[in-house]
Length: 258
Image (cartoon, rainbow, N blue to C red; front, side, top):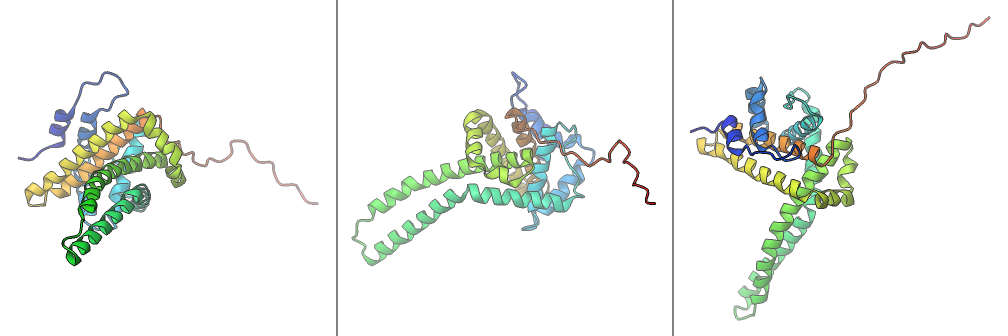
């Protein structure tokens, strides 16, 4: 039995006690409010299947977040500006790599310990390797925690990039950590929505993998909407880009040459 966005919105709708709480039902149900939602989701699913090109889907989610933070009634953008979406997604990948770097380093340490312990057991089965394996038991949960923190920080940094319009804002580490510290509850709720969206995204595998064309892209759209809501809650409203307009006063005529 297929799970529709409308049903998911009903399941995850919660009574909000104030205007600053996450509207989880809206995040899961807004997609179907767009007249072209089916084609947009299917295009997103096709993009998701192509390595590197799927960066554009990450950028699409960031664009959804920006539109939500701006208050757009229909936050699903068109796929026509593919180059812009791809660059946004590429920036998000760069942001994620930087903030997950401690996790990667610790994981490399873990691999080195595993390799060293295995070599020690092979060369000397009677050697005391209990300390190495005890260290492994400590590192596994630490890596898990670091990965979660790095993921949350990546989204906060991406939100700063969206709000300010410059990639450098994503790497103001002190301000990123301060945002997490001052709004911990809001970002925890956001990350729970990310987990729920990820679960929904895997439901397409049930339909012999074909359904992932729908649910995979849909999950990113949900994350984008939730990120936009969290940006509003934490005061990270995007700057309004001003476009050039010609001067309203006429210019002085050029001097006449005799």
